Image (cartoon, rainbow, N blue to C red; front, side, top):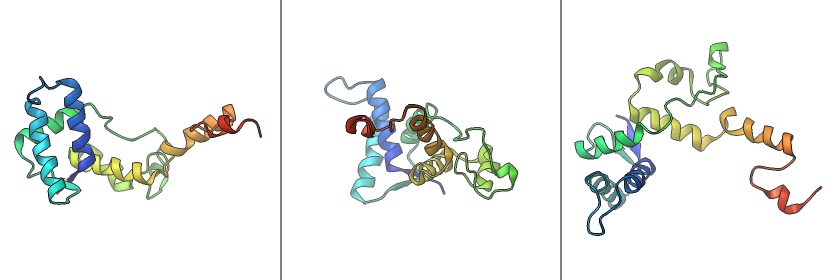
Length: 149
């Protein structure tokens, strides 16, 4: 069972709202289907929805949104090919890298969520480091606000 996190359902709702805005009276069918799942999750204090038992209309709407997201977190610096258990480039485990092509969308999104929350892979930190060294300014603008050191 792969769980679809509530933040992914919320992202899908917002994507559909932008794609098919309400007529002022009712949201589009995709938003309504996803909102029903979202509302039940909030009411039941659940953070994940079972991918396999999600209502068909909601799952189809979620999958349409999912198709617009990046597939693999790979940045072409795979340290698992060098024997590491965890890839330094993308943050996935050796098994996740190997089984990625057969993972379900829910399993892939759960992996994306984990590596995003950990934010330890080079995918998340090397680019910020390069930006600081190239410009001398942190990506959040803190250095610019303080002035030269």
